[in-house]
Length: 370
Image (cartoon, rainbow, N blue to C red; front, side):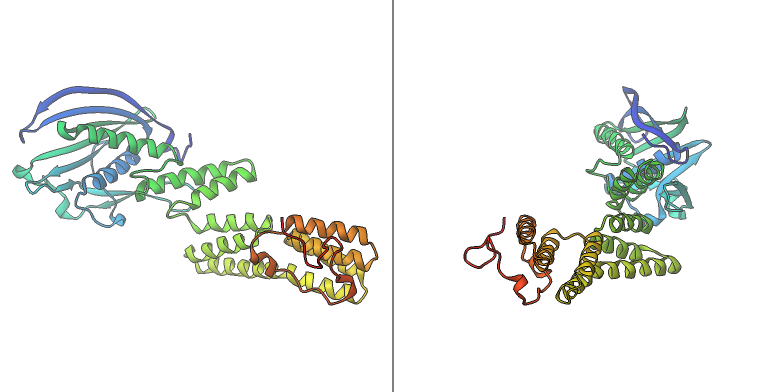
């Protein structure tokens, strides 16, 4: 798997043991205990699991900016949710933690913020009905998660822990919980780190496209994808990516630079059409070498076979090569697309004898499209 700032490597979940022993506590609930190990750093695991539990239990929460509710005791991270007499769950914590990408290059950090006073303390106190508590401690290169939950919800909590840690290890998986902001930040970091380490351009582009599908992808992802598309001659896609990058960019200097790049791509996108029209003027003026050069430049900038072959047919006719002209027209038919939009892009041909209907069409109309 991936390695991000030494926080994790090989995020495969390893279940160490599942203790079926049950016990009763002061709140008279029967509890099960479960211990799992994961190759994930303790603060990252605690943040992800706290956020997942908060969502699963519909616990009282604040904005995502406040982070996931976690307490710390020595080197342990405690995730605790208490059930009140009205059936509502309340997180008990002394701080909020959240995963973030401070530089947008895949280096994930864990942010901390002190919790408001109302979150600190014994929660519901003597009115508490039940509690779910996770104790996350460092273990080897990863962590150990000790879960303490009511027997009635043990299977649900166990499934939640397994699903959350599995999602953290696999950036392609979706499903329940996959869109949680902390988990999204973690998976985005994995993809950006992998893209940075990719040895070939195609592999990097694939990873960046996957990263772009996640919320919170930095503007640099869309900018680089736009450059890849521009280099491949996919100018419409390049413009869409670059404009998205400009919208997401917070730095006004960087945003202005991207805007200039958008302008250059727009100019490049319109240039092939101008070249094709100018080539027709060259043909009418008898400058066949000039026309051929312009058509060649247009094909390189933005290939459009059904247009390019028809223009080539015009060029061949002016040279007196009827066989080559017929062959070019045949190729144009083979490449012509079914959508009417493609037809509208075709340059207007000059009304000369060189553009007479092809003998391949016996009725004087253009042959049926394939």
